[in-house]
Image (tube, rainbow, N blue to C red; front, side, top):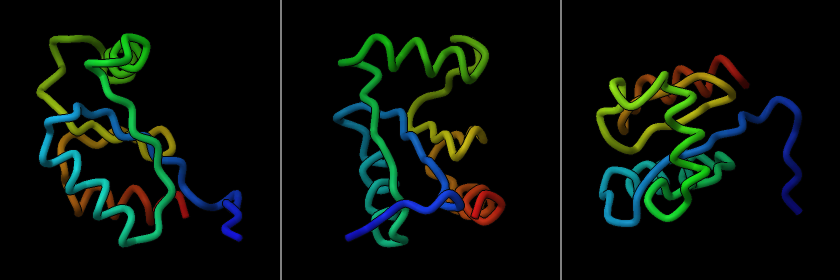
Length: 90
């Protein structure tokens, strides 16, 4: 059984079904045994609206993936930033 501890980061990935970097990010987190949720911003309007709210609106949107690591937003598949956010939160 895999129980999430309080210290384990909660990661949300905002993505699309056709985004290669999104799939790479998911595989990367799986290899690191990080629990995450993926939200498709094209199929789920509430996920899109949630993402726009988190990044401060459409003018700040540069594409997916966008990750929310326990409240810290990481744009793109940026391994160093994701690793740093995971380390801070763990």
